[in-house]
Image (tube, rainbow, N blue to C red; front, side, top):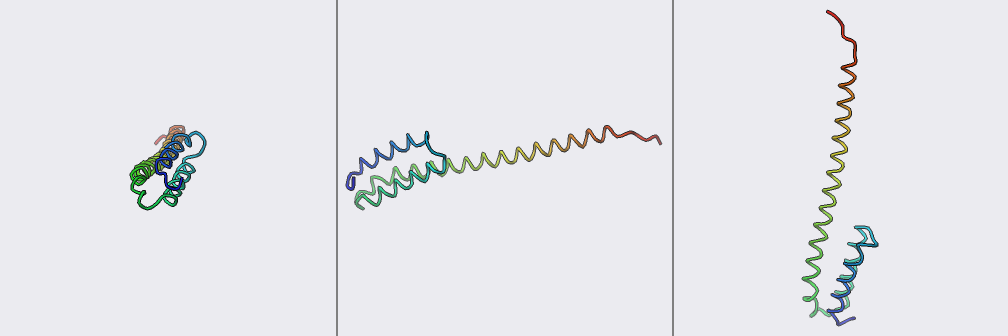
Length: 104
């Protein structure tokens, strides 16, 4: 496979479609990145231009995917914080309404 850029592209495409079933998100990115690294190491420099467009497209999509996951985690943390604040506020309001009133 040292000089066969088509085989590397077919193999990388195969791994990208199959890996989502078996690994976690961070492991998928690491595995595919390492495979691209192996392809660049094993191919001649004159053949790198055939792999680069695929690699750049994958890198952009994985960065966007990772960024989207981070945003979802942050939104989840914020919603947990807000629901806790709302619970505490409601609990305080219930406590205030149950206090006996003094007559003046």
